[in-house]
Length: 91
Image (cartoon, rainbow, N blue to C red):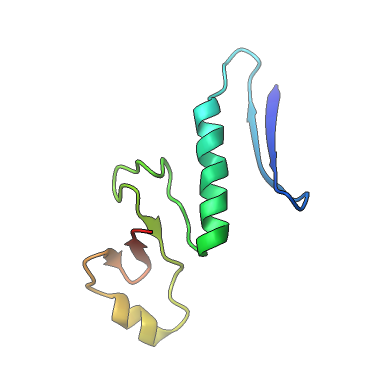
């Protein structure tokens, strides 16, 4: 096995990726992962798979879920949402 560990400046382990010795690793994916972690931390959002070229929402990020019923109702039917629980935005 091989493993890659991503550790933030405070020394906190943020990601571990394991893969077999017989297969190569994707440096581009590790770079994307570091960018996504930094974007999530800075903007308090989530980055979907394949971000920033996600097949569903492109380079948008995911807004944290609603914490109350009022906010959930406000999100329903927005152009940038699939439902109250999945709202995205451009940074």
